[in-house]
Length: 74
Image (cartoon, rainbow, N blue to C red; front, side, top):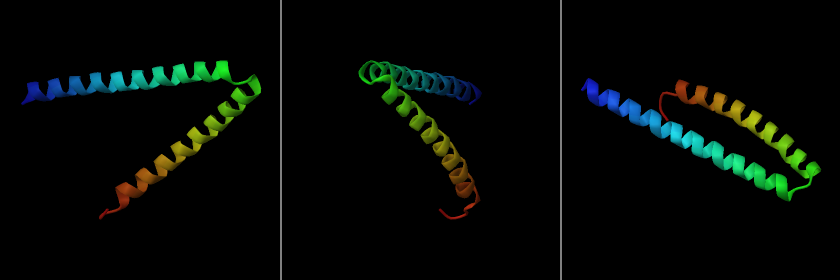
């Protein structure tokens, strides 16, 4: 049982790391493509919008997690 749990944990960490690296790699490529296509003003505008979007998404996720934890019947 312990060996199976250890193997499952290692496999899970590997898959999560691969997913994270793939996500970051795709985002990096998209940023490079957008930087080549857009003007500096447009690219800066998109960067500002992205910062605010990520900020509000983070706040939303924290608030939603608290509600889901407190709710007895979903």
